[in-house]
Each structure stands twice: as structure tokens, then as C-alpha cells.
Image 1 (tube, rainbow over the protein chains, first blue to last red):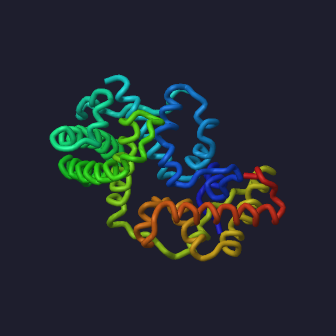
Image 2 (image 1 turned 120 degrees about the vertical axis):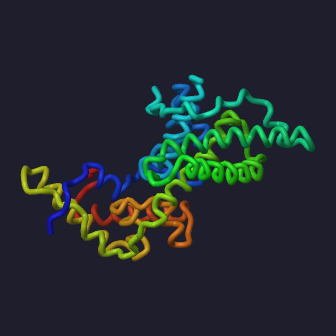
Image 3 (image 1 turned 90 degrees about the vertical axis):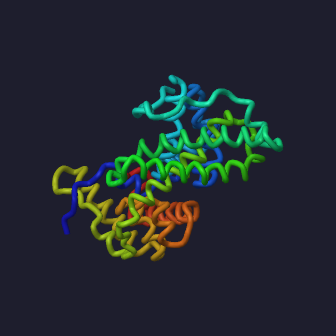
Length: 78
Length: 216
């Protein structure tokens, strides 16, 4: 059977990784701190381990992470 | 680290409320609390509108008034959550950022569910057979094709039916996890744990087929 072209991210999205990661509830708990650390240029991934791996694996949490950063960006210039 | 975020058109948004100690009045009584709750609602509505209009491309059939109604609903639900969980705020971020995340969550979930409201979510796990095939070509493509075949076999044989359904729906069909959770009478966190377990089983299956970790 032939199918559509292979999306290079597909295998990663199917298989995930062995890296330790937070679940959605834990991600939500830490998201505000993580985004502020990111925007401050602090080592967010080291200070909140497992959150980045979760964002890679969870499109919904990744959207909310992106939106929170974008909203704070807007606030910083208004 | 520079921010990866881009700024949408925010001309319709009210200015961000000023900083910051006012939130302590949410613990007060009477007029002080009422004023603080009103201020909180303004903050949450700002965030909800930001999210609804940012993601509004998936809701093109809705009018501006309908989009705003969605934002108002999200802000109201977020206010309930924030007030219920005030004791959880530990000052690890600003209060504004902490409150914003509740509004963004409510708004993004409402946008996704609304966008999928009239769309069927297939609960037929056989759809994984549509997994793309690597085309014929150089050695790398041959390797990719073999790995894909191992993944396809793993989806069919190594996962429970529920794990297969969640993996195929979220990863291959692009169904938002909140939408799938609603259709299955579950919640995002439970489904994500199932997705995580499915991925782990699939990795083990692929490794047993001779593809070491990192082959993807």
C-alpha cells in the first residue's frame, strides 16, 4: 500500500522518547514559572525538568505554552 | 533564550492591568474583594480574547461576536478555577502569568472543541494502516521504510485497542486530545498517560525488531 509522503517528524511523534517527562497536569502546574524563566533567559529546561519533553509530545500543552509566551510578549510592549 | 513567539494583532485588546499586589484582595471580603474579582475578570478576559482570536483561523464560520462570546465563556470558567485555586498560588511566577494560564487553557480547549464540534472523530483503530510509506530510493529510505514497517506492525500487535485508538487519533488523525477526551468521556491527562504508555510499548517493539533507540 502506498501512502502520503513521510513527514520527518512523524516517527518522533509516534515513538516519543525515553526522556523523563511531566504529564499534562504537572505541565500546567509549572507552565507559568517555565515561561517566565524562558522569557528571562534563564535555563528553564534545567530548572523545570521534563516540561520540554512533554511539550514535544503533547500538541495541546505546546499550544498553550506558545500562547502564554506570546501574550507575555505582547504585555511587555503595551 | 530569545522568545520564539510572534505577536498577533492585539489592537482589539485592552491594555494589560497594572502590577500586581491587588490580587491579595481576592482573599478579602466585601467591596475590596468585589473590586479585585472584577479586575481578575478583566485580566482573564484579555487572555481569553487573545487566545480565541489567535486561534480563530480554525473557526472561520463564527462571527466576531460569537468568537467574543466564546472568550467571555472561557474567562468566566477560568475565573471560577482561579478563585477555587487561589491557595495554590505560591508566587513562583507573577500572579498575572499564573492567572493567564487558566484563561488560555479554557479558551484553547473551547476553540478546539468548537472547531471539531461538527466533525466526526473516527473510533476505528484500523486507520493506522494509512501510515505513510517511505518511497523507494537511497539507502536511508530503505532504512526508513523498514522502520516504518516495524512501527506499523507494532501499532497493530503491541498496543491495546485503547492505546491504538489514542495514538492513531492524536498522532495520525490530528484529533486534539481534549476533543478525543470529550468523545471518550475521559480527560486530557488520562489520555496523555495512555499515549505515553503506547509510545513506550511501540519503542520497545521497534527495538526488539532491531532498531536501536534513536533510529527515528
